[in-house]
Amino acid sequence: MADNTDDAQPPAVDESPASAGHASAARGPGPRLRVDDPGELIAALPALIEFVPERSLMAVLLRRPQTPGSSSTIGPVLRFDLDQDGGKRGLAAAIASAVAGICAAEESTEVLAVIIDDRMRQPRRTRTPGGAKAWGALIAAFAQHLADDEVTLTDAWAVPAIQARQRWWSLLDADHRGTLPDPATSMVTFAYVLNGRPIRATRSQLTDLVVQDRDSAQEVAAHLEDALSAGHDRYVAAIRRADPGSFRRRALERVLYRVADLDSGVLPTVRQMAELAVVLRDRMVRDALLALAVGEHSALAEQLWVILVQSLPGRDRAEAAVLLAYSAYVRGDGSLAGIALGAALETDPSHSMAIGLDTALRSGMRPEELRRLADHGLGIAGHLGIDLGPIRR
Image 1 (cartoon, one colour):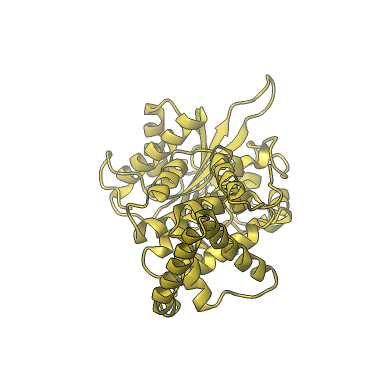
Image 2: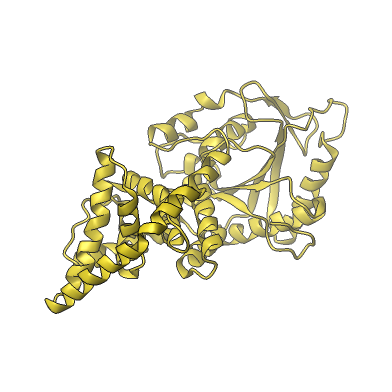
């Protein structure tokens, strides 16, 4: 998103929501990150946002120590594109505004910044801090705007790329510099991969997940009328039996069958995807499916949502994208959640759940705070007589 003035809308942001950035906190599988070790912190960034950032400004929020004498811990981690229109001052103001808003929600008063840009060259020791004048000026403006919101930029570093043996340097202290360890051998990376969280080589590997396959969408569209007619017939039959709940129960079961098929390596057919598009138009069924995000089959369900986002036509695609976004959000993948929400809102700008989740993500709402949506889905499924299985807490 362009940001031309100091009061511009905040630029698009990839965020690792609060609980996802807890490699150093009590929650989660990871070891503690020492915030006084810039090389370790920078090397861990791909694990924290689940892809390797390029030409980006990373903002790492610090949480206050929980007990006297303890260290600050890593909170939300946010990524902003550097290549945006509007000049460095407008970019600094927009990014600072977005970061300060999440700092307020997190009660955080300190931020660390990392600029990753392959166009930079390491400065000589005799030069003043910064190295790349444009980005040095950006950091200075960023720090000033944060200070206006009573947030301190504690430190800032620059590195051409997050790769083993790359040189990093401070943008605030000309004599502070070092060499990156191998990100692949980082204990934080190891912990995240061991916990089943993939780290992608580029952000485009994430965006590719939500690109629509137009040929598939056309094939699905050709079957939609028949799927709608069959769904109407089932609904009428349920009403005649004086059992309207059975209509939604069977609809929910259809989705669960497709999830089970994926577990066996069987992909949905075009006709089945058309049936699922019709099923997701029922808000009660769609809301029940939110519960799959916290269940034992969450990874399979997310795989199904990806297939549907790529294959469904029109506004039906938005429903699948919202389910994908919610699934990614509650497991801490804010980057994929944001990309999926972008796809949903591009398809249906008025989609209320997409708007709500997008607002939650941008404001820094923690994933665990959204669990109540999954609990609501469990309640719906239970009311329909369906047990969705064990739930992760």
